[in-house]
Image (cartoon, rainbow, N blue to C red; front, side):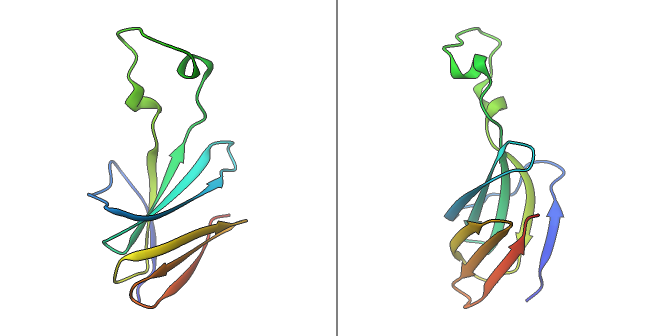
Length: 107
């Protein structure tokens, strides 16, 4: 299969999540990885909540969506649904219904 890693210029396409795992990011933010029906894997940056976000901020200008996960990259190596993901150290391992197991370096 073709394996590709690319950055996203904006939001990812519709991604029906079938599996997920998490890892710590080098910048202190958590990394969420989701596998989908489309065979793709999306890397998400999950920022740590600031003290304002952790408290009860009820101001009108607060947009909770701004603090949510941000897509960072797309991994393509499966031709069918991603059925399992696991982050171990600097590697994310994925298994798909296509019978393929991929090991992705995230260092």
